[in-house]
Figure 1 (cartoon, rainbow, N blue to C red):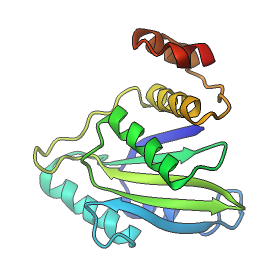
Figure 2 (cartoon, rainbow, N blue to C red):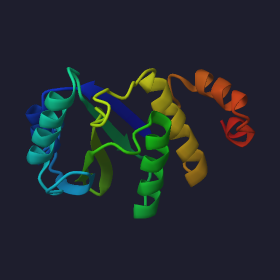
Figure 3 (cartoon, rainbow, N blue to C red):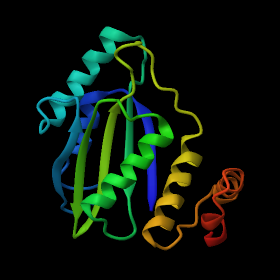
Figure 4 (cartoon, rainbow, N blue to C red):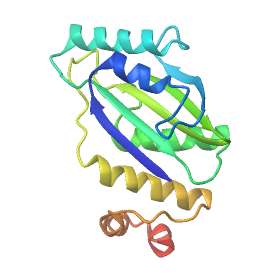
Amino acid sequence: MIIKSSQRAKHQALAVHLLKKRDDDDYDQTVTVSNGRYIWPQDDVKQALADMEEISRQSSRVQKDLYHVTINPSEPLTAEQWASVFERYEQEFGLEDLAFIEVTHDKKGRVHKHRVYERVDVDSGKAIQLSHTRIRNEFVARQVEFELGHQLTVGKHNRTIMLRLALECQHDILEWM
């Protein structure tokens, strides 16, 4: 499983990217708005990102208020498994109560999902701090791969992940790796 993320602005450019019917390799893909939280209407990506931009502008001075996450599993996932993956991801990064819009891309039966979070907490006006995202993305991916019985993806940060697993006494995953 590969998980990538970035902090960004340029809301409408991201909306255009998420809604592309042809991917970067020029293959057709089906695009579906599949989920959302605190977003209305939930089926309009451009409006959702415009609303997020307005929320950020009114409540903070954060330049890159969006957190864009892409999860690309090596094997198909059920709806319950997708929900579990995102739940674990949100717990790792403290995103549980933030607004998001989710877009699913299906290219020749291979599905990956994008979630775009508004990382500014409306109540406090502060952005969720996101550090060491690459290592933490891989940490979540290894945990999920183990739990789902998927093949281990060799990642750049596996040594660091193994150290964290040892510190957190997650020996079953550590032995599997």
